Image (tube, rainbow, N blue to C red; front, side):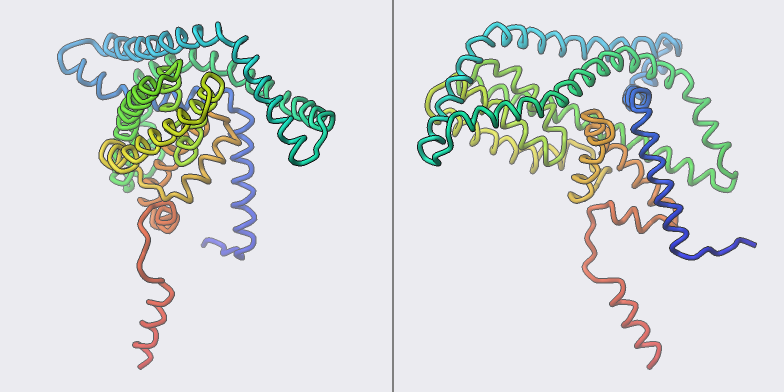
Amino acid sequence: MLKKYPFYIKCTVILFGLILFIYVLFYLRGILVPFAFGLMLAILLNPFVNSLQNIGIPRILAISVSVLTAILIFAITGYVLSKQIASFSTELPLLKKKIIYIIQRIQMEVAQRFNYGMSSQNEFINQAKVGTQPFMGQTLMTIIGGIEAVLLIPMYSFLFLYYKKLIINFLYEVFAEENSKEVSAVLTQTKGAIQSYMFGLLLEAVIVACLNSIALMILGIEYGILLGILGAIINVLPFIGGIVSILLPIAIATLTKDGISTQIGIILSYIFIQFVDNHFLIPYIVSSRVKINALCSIVIVLMGGSIWGISGMFLSIPFIGVLKIIFDKIPQLKAWGKLLGDHVPTRYIGQIRAVRRRSVAK
């Protein structure tokens, strides 16, 4: 007979387990981040592998062709970005002079209007520089970790696709035989949700990148293609990405052009693109299976960023979508699945139960 423990003991154990789980995720992030990206890429490539096998191509060759195709696509995208970045780096000295000139003008305005001396402002700027040094070091470590991940992700994806049947059989054998239908349903929904979400996300990013680049080139912004692609990548982050992506072209326009007409044009263009993205692309292109409410989306993105950095922000939404599918299939966790979802009930369950008790009492 199972012992029943008090509620506060259960809460303590659950909180301790969550803290331990988050600590493990943070401590092993160098291993788990490329592992997670490799798993998602393998799920994304699985239909392509199956279609190649259906036309008679051997399994190992089909997996190799799929992984190499993915590498080629990312390499072409990286080449385009690197060419734009190389062109951008040649004008860094001029941009640096413009930045210094703008800072000096701002300092003079502050000194005249707020009676805040230049020496005090310079001291504040120097303190800010010292404070950003740890951030720059962390950014450098993120870039180095990204290079390592680029080498590990294709290998993980290949191995996941090669040992797919072994992993699926393991998941079936771990759970009791009477739960095989639930396990099959969870695996099918999880695979379908990730595949449709990732395909939709890639298509959305391509469309947004094209719209961003066209708008910036029409406005005469230098490096419009680079800024358009970067904006589309950042835009993948829900709610936060749309705000950050607009700051990059505004900053470049401020450094390279006089006046504020170009900045206003950028703001209006990006507002239109965000309207198209939020009302047409996301509802009809991005997967409708991963329905997470706005509150949970923001919290999970920020938590993912604090644990795994930028990679965690990109992985957080698919991860919480998989958790919601699992919660919806387990009776004891259905309430948590509803909490994560975007369906808002029209009535309070407590009020409904109170009405039922009154009717029974009568």
